[in-house]
Length: 249
Length: 280
Image (tube, rainbow over all chains, first blue to last red):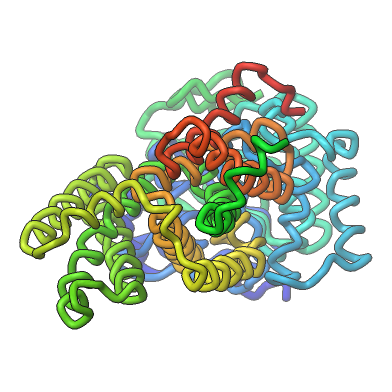
């Protein structure tokens, strides 16, 4: 499977109320690759994910995921604190895609759920109501759902934003685990240092594709200035995105 | 003990209690999705949006029935008007940047005004308008109870069959879409389910009060439970118990029957809020 396309976009245009969010986006993400999506807020990163999973319609062009086994962890989840689900319920939802609407949980499904809780270090929180968790714990539970989903393509929209350091570490370990398992992982991030260090490909997006390729080619100073419209500074040897107080570590 | 039994010695009270309890179970379960998805105003809009359909069905069937309208036609007219309300709201949302509550409110008043205009053109409807708004729980016949029971069972079976996709869509529609769930179709299906619950409910407790059964028992259950199946069970129990308790109050204190049932259901929520039970 490695080398075949996991996601293909061709001349994709998406707009909201006449305001363009994505313009003429064309790219092909190879299966099994780790892709960092860089861009300032409003660059269309979330829109790209939403279009990929079919939540927003293209005005023109197309975007296609070449697998039905897709896990998506959106950027914001404003769950009502009284929403009646426990952490274990949230992770179990990850199995619904495979099980369909009625099939019962088998041993393998229960094992995947337990493993997912374990990998994210939230096994002890299984019976807690999801709405009572801290931001970092919620993100771990949602990532555990994606792990339980056992998906071939994983889309993460700014998973490191607003979470504590242990959760950031857990997410980095998880990205490595997915990569070793040959999964395609696409991550929207503001972490420029990580994008150049931890990913196979970098997509620089600012409504249009500014650059897409290996980190050394797609994160040149010129490309980053164009991507972030100048809202970027050099600190020592690192480029820092200052568009919305996002910093590299 | 006699105080508790006396009202239910009358057959029409027993029948009314069964009908209201059935509606309570349905609204108690379906209402969980209404509050989880923030559809309160949408449900209110549906409850009033059925009015034009009822007026048209009345006009078309009352004359042939010697002034007595066909009840099945009334129910079907209500369902169709409810779906028109849901789809019109959806269309407004898709074609304009207004907020969901604004879209629901605009369509709500449009359908209500349309219903009143149509009713004003239908001779002999004024008395039935009162029944539409406030229901006639003590006037429910045994045949209607059977029809309601079948409809309630069918809707509850559908809710059970669609439990997982409804939960996914209610929890997070973005993740549901990524997992291959047909989000738009399921949201429409959910609106149909709420519409059918409203149509079954308004005939018993009225269009104004059916919202009470859709909202109060699930809101109370949310304070007591951690998981959706438990919330649905507790909500259905509160709503069903409100029927005999409400009729008991109504009988002894000479109160309006439908309103008494809804008052009991809402009281359960108020008591729980005051007592602030631990949700964990």
